[in-house]
Amino acid sequence: MRAIRLDQDTRAVLQAGMPAIGSGFTTGGSTMAQCMIDPTGKTPAQIHQWWDGLSRWQQDQLITDFPAQVGALDGVPADDRDKANRLALHQQKQAVVDLLAAGHGDQYELREQLQRITKVEQTLQRLGDRGYLLMVDTEAYDGHGKVAIAVGNPDTARHTGVWVPGLSTTMYGSMDGNIDRVMRINAAADRLTDGRSGDVSTVYWLGYDAPDLDNTSVLGNSRSESGRDPYLGFMNGLRATHEGDPTHLVAMGHSYGSTVIGEAAATGNLPADDIVVAGSPGMHVDSADRLLDDPRHVWAGASDSDPVADTPMISTSDRIALGLTNPSLGLTAWGLESAADASHGAAPTTDGFGANTWKADTDGHTGYWEPASDSLNNQARVLAGRYDRVTLENGEAPENIP
Figure 1 (spheres, rainbow, N blue to C red):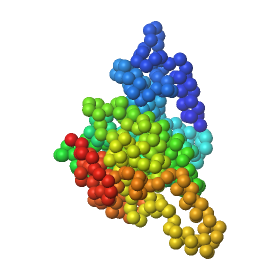
Figure 2: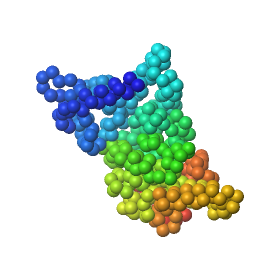
Figure 3: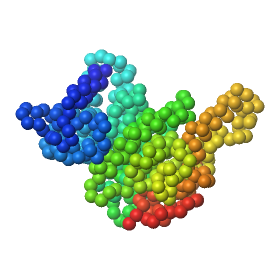
Figure 4: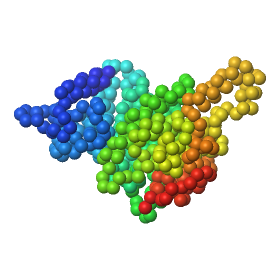
């Protein structure tokens, strides 16, 4: 598409001879492009330093001139990323509408893209002043899209949770239900913060290509490995841009999303104070202390009826029965199960892993956010730092956050 080519051309121009961080305008006829930064090799902290070195006028002009590029930079404050990404989304929508009206391009693909754009717009309207668009790319991953939307400002929140979804998540098909989940966690945690309102931010982070239902990608590690660095960048960006005292930063994940967190934590560079996961099939490590130095800050929950976290995904009796009636399918079931175990390792709720296991009183693989449930409230208690209120099945709670 023309929009993609224009974006690529713009990036090429910007990345040719960029000034050093904090250099601002050069003398003699500089352009705003010369104030832009090439993010290659830059840490979020360095990008934040560069952004802070610009004047407010320069920042606003860069948002106006290069909204997609600014909105994608980890280390730019949430308010500014939100402005940039909303502008980029608006411009993209206008370009798609114009192409549709002119009958140019792949009309089916354009209509699909317009649906994804509209879904993001509707979600932001639903959240009102509490919504922050921190990342958006409606064309990523063959149209699955990537997006990060915060409920509450993570730069000012006392407690921030960044939640990674799992299997078969897409921007369009999964947005409403996943936003419901982060809103419920947000509200439940906010009720626990000693009468203070609005000091919790929860972020829906779909920054990786979640596995699909129509292939075996969920059995492999490639999707979580490719999500590792983007998640690390985003989390370190939140550390860099937070105002005042450091936020209590929590990595939160469901299902295959927990494997992304596991990959990120295993590097030793994930700046999380706590990790809390639900329905995890395994986190690619064999013990909680490989995720965080203090395993008391690793929290995992799984419903008794969750076939993913319980592993095996198919019970032994069912596999035997399947093998008797259809030997080929039975062998496949055993093979898939073995592959899943080998790929993701032991679930963090298993004995010997060393995580705090919280009580899950909901059913199945997707019920962990039922209103008023222990499953929901236990995740919220960790996010709010009210560890002594978590109903534990195993483990030892650390001291509460003051």
